[in-house]
Length: 425
Image (cartoon, rainbow, N blue to C red; front, side, top):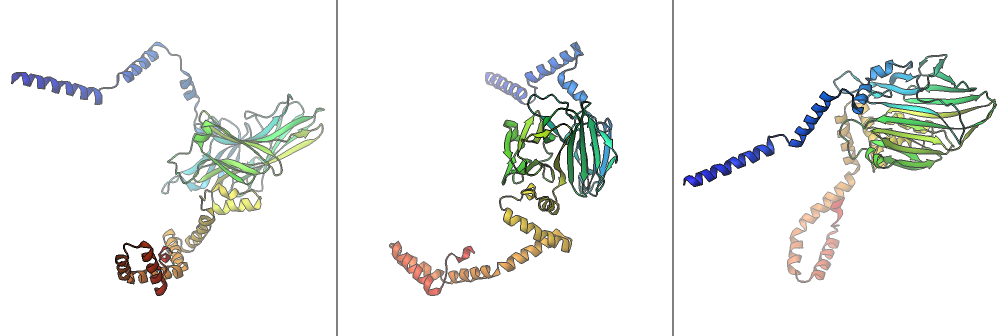
């Protein structure tokens, strides 16, 4: 008996040790990793690449403050444009807040090198083996004239490359979400150049919050007549490239949009690509702009930094004749049905001031519209209920002859003027 107790004690002790090692004791690999980290820190003061990158990170306000800027504002947005690169990189939505009960406004675009950089740039690329100094994202532009961008008050930026080429950006802002950028070059040299205008959206990181599978967030664009939607994860695996002579492209969130629209009538090459948690949507005009001595060339880019308001987006699509620009809002597969239904419910919301009442009214209207069908269906179902005893009798009578049963049932329906499938209505 004593031997059995000793054996039982050994088994229980072993079990306790196994359970403790499995669920409570830290894995030895993690301990070793931690130990190696401590040893590394104690033995060397040389920073790692990751530590250097962490040290380079600056806040949004710091990034805004270290470069000269021009301020911009209208009824819907406020922010600034960086004179370093002539980049649109500071946009705040004035009429939208992060939370229902908060006061903090939605911050959308952020300067490069900040933690959540998100900006739009435009410029020129050279062709062939030409050596020409072009403005880069680090080029310092000079303001000519007005230094505050508002509706009906455009700003003009200028840069001289020191080799007889003068680059100009005229930036206009409407009262909603549209920036019109007219970029031009004056050639005071005795040489001719081939130049290609481009525009690019750069974003670091993906949208915050849980992704909804029925709502697209990521890259999108219309090329010709075809809508393309690409997820961030898909572009991380393989970049997307396409050529077209009309369309637009951009990056969309659940509620917000950045989009760039090439000048009409010019074929362009568009790309969606990703590298090291940075996502880019860009295009370049494929046909060279020939800049002869003493001449100028100009290219226009329409840029949107928008809250996806249906009326505003539809107005831009119609006013600027942008192909399927209304599809920046994801209406789903049943676009032909969901969009009209939205306008109806929005009308009743504005009429009553309450979405609950709007839904009740919509429900009542749908019931009223389909009442004739529903009433016919109810009558047919009631007749079918009355015929149940006779149908049961026929089934018993002809249970061994299915053909005869089917014949008698059809005769019954015809005689009583009942449609057995009308209940589907």
